Image (cartoon, rainbow, N blue to C red; front, side, top):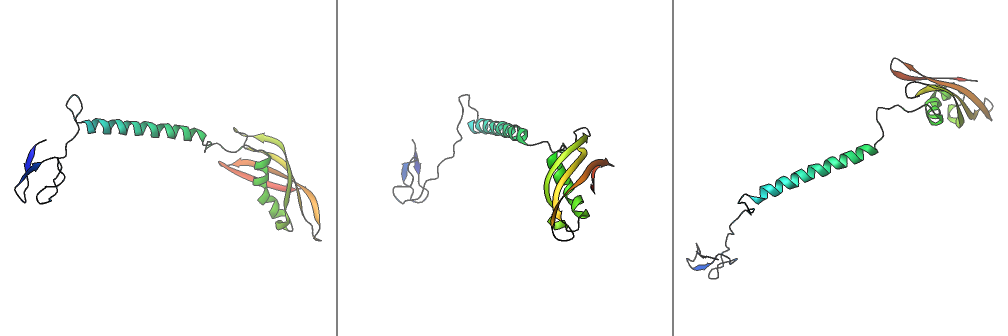
Length: 157
């Protein structure tokens, strides 16, 4: 603790006092940087440590969440769900009343491609006929590669 002189009233008071006891002027606290045991600036060491730790934690979170994501470039395999989704629009275009289409089931006949993303399926569905009554029907549906794209064709049986 040391004594300082107030710039306003010129009286001495402790540098630990918040205000001058005579006039009330606030003391400006000296900003001292904490030092480590070897005399270096401790805030730089702490900042580096916190920064490195933050990067390490962020990297760890990216690895964990990245492993949970599905592979974006891997195409979907040709299965009952893929056949239902891929063939629905093609089959609807062939019906008298496309809005009446109701998927019933899909039977996979064959698959091809590196990831089995292409194939042939038989789709069973219900739809309105020309008289307004619902009938069961089947359609053969095929997905195949064409110039790097997946194409789909369907034919009513």
